[in-house]
Image 1 (cartoon, one colour):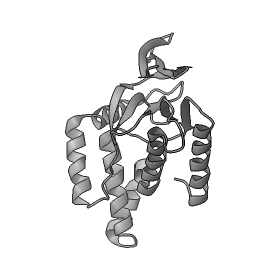
Image 2 (cartoon, rainbow, N blue to C red; image 1 turned 180 degrees about the vertical axis):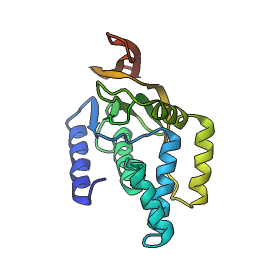
Image 3 (cartoon, helix red, strand yellow; image 1 turned 30 degrees about the horizontal axis):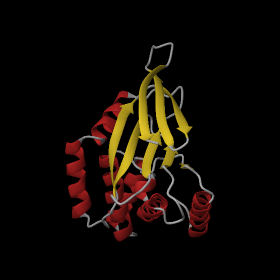
Image 4 (tube, one colour; image 1 turned 30 degrees about the vertical axis):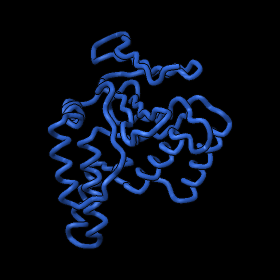
Length: 223
């Protein structure tokens, strides 16, 4: 997702912000870092086959699937996924000074809205969240709604975890859980920061509705 020089800049900027005493570290990335588990696992599985069998038939088939299905998120680039995770957990542990109350990854571009929180490793002082809100005027087709809803299900998660193990993909020490969602329709998200407190508010209008209605007011961190 980023080359080494770009990642060095991101990590240095994050460390500098913490050293300056920010209460909340905000990272913006158009594509979500933390995805629905089943989709994350499918992308990790695909990347493993692509890299391991590069130049051979299985690798070419994996690459064709990647392009046809737009498997382009952080999960499809395992090294970048893990490096961003290491940078965020270092911040949340207080490696660069007092840990911010939250480290927030803000994203969109996946046809729905949701909130997820990192739950492992469990030695973090600050809380790490993925907040995803897709654009206004963005009505997801029914198959996409079904796919993302299934992507958060426990059964799909277990099934795709088996695929990852069969492919012998590199394991991750990171784990996350959905806090809210998925929500579909036109969406506006609001991040409310007051000292070390943080809230995520989401308003949605489904197809045919003339007004947005608040569907979520989620606490991300206490005082």
